[in-house]
Image (cartoon, rainbow, N blue to C red; front, top):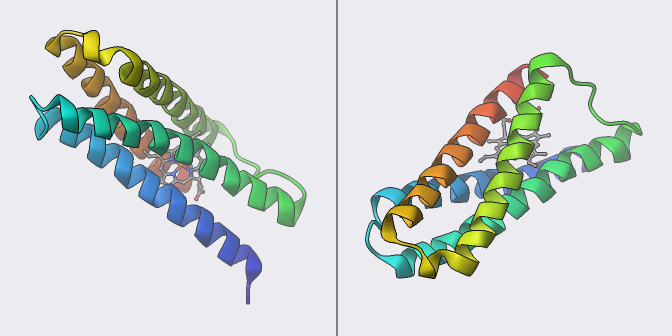
Length: 137
Ligand code: HEM
């Protein structure tokens, strides 16, 4: 058994499902759950967990490298920029989801929709950055 590949695959499963959950939930909240605050509230929890899973599993890729090679992957230029963008999206999205869960019940409908628009942009940006991280590293 190739344990290193198994470790990468397990981390990647979490990371892939996290990405699908984030993009799917953000766009569902925006387009399908338009006037249903109940569904949006549940989706906001998925966003909060999703961003946390992405940060943890993203760090997990680095941890597996460190475990097997004693160093983090050597990336430069566009790959670094893509990684920084993903980290910024995850931090911003997590914060926004936390604020939304605490306060959105008191917000007017347009403000809630704006928050979901930001979540959709952040998740789509992170997913796009993932392709650049993958192919420029
Ligand atoms: C703190 C946040 C994040 C970190 C540290 C992180 C880190 C990473 C790393 C190290 C990889 C492996 C790159 C490679 O295969 O060369 C990866 C892959 C990937 N990440 Fe992230 N990531 C983060 C957030 C996200 C988010 C928010 C999404 C999507 C919404 C995402 C989607 C993906 C996808 C789809 C891949 C697989 C790309 C491929 O192999 O084609 N990541 N990520």
